[in-house]
Image (cartoon, rainbow, N blue to C red):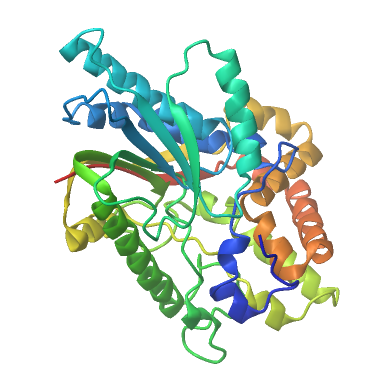
Length: 388
């Protein structure tokens, strides 16, 4: 795989180079996504009844010569993707057995899909370990490297498509927010929370395009009657802010502390303002209305259920533990944000400056005792739809 030069330019950041570094942190150390995806796991657990219910609407006569094909789009790495595929397989196996008897269940094939920069080696290492520990081999597995904003499979071949905590990541930074001096220029910030209306609108425009591309591709790839299940970062209905409450706005990993850490690098002369202004986090939290509008524009899908959920950042017990050890909390919080965006920051700034940025971030979190007394929620939109 070709590696981008370091640091990346703002132009590269919005175009062809982003997909080469746009992945969750690989490996299995303290910074890895494997060890920093508990809130995503909780979201999957809370939304599991919706997934199981949607699978009850799946109508497919089993064919012993053709497997049921399942895809996880934006799989990252770690147990979350396996948990969901297991749920799909086990639910459908029970359903086929109940309807057609013990010999009625077809074989299953699961494809784990993500960008080429994803750590597929770690994904399949963990899958192999899981399969060895599980005496029942429930499905055959493969990987597909590519963007879920493009076609990945032949027409009419996918029976169940899931995407978990991935679709809020955009295909690129909107070019408009990097146009110096324009009303859409996101000067002084690295994300859109608290940004000018024009900046938010530029992100919303890119979000609509990306959602249209995602749905159009799945419309082509899925069989009639197939199930589409999506869990994505989202915001409450009727709101313009990316978050529903002030505590979350203050404490979210992409907001106040991240902006302060970038400013620290500027104040210390390690980077200039133009470098900071060229980096924008490619994430947008859609509202349920925006998702429904995308389904309407695309056609070919019927919404079975859509719901907004609030996912707590960590347990009360953990919060009490961290109150006694703010340094440990700062480290854990920094690991969390690095698991999500460290590969992008490394590519943009280079590993040395990236290390300095997250050191500043950890110091600010560790010394802000207010954070230990407020709770952050991650909003998610859960969608189940049937291909019609």
